[in-house]
Image (cartoon, one colour):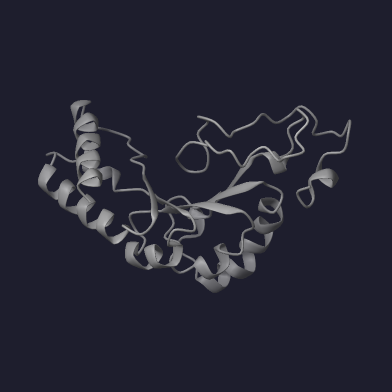
Length: 199
């Protein structure tokens, strides 16, 4: 059995019935779907426990603090929560390349957010094929006055080349405006697919 599962939810415990599985098309973490055959746990009896679920942590609010402060004031409080989950996602908009030595300690870490402000190459080397490299390109590409297909294509091509040895998912998110032009979204997806298929 998964460590800690029984102590978190005993039969008739106060958390019974509060959870539902998220190992399907459910949005998990800071982007992506929950599809996996690794959840729920092998001893799953229909009662959903934290160890049957994807967990998620992030600390984008502390992007301005040093890795040392993050290690002292944030991470020690996140870790005991994340240890309860069967699989974990970590990160949102914060660049994780300077915090990876801590974040990699999360048990069952599977999906790592790579924001536009991260060092893509460093994280590609750190994550390799062991984690899902959840690439988040700049949402401003869909919000600017002009839709610069050539620049978008060049940046995606470079990012996909850098991550060619990783398990990559590309997620365009945090779009607060698309300049009233839904065609931008469609075209951005087409460009991303073309570049991924061209590798």
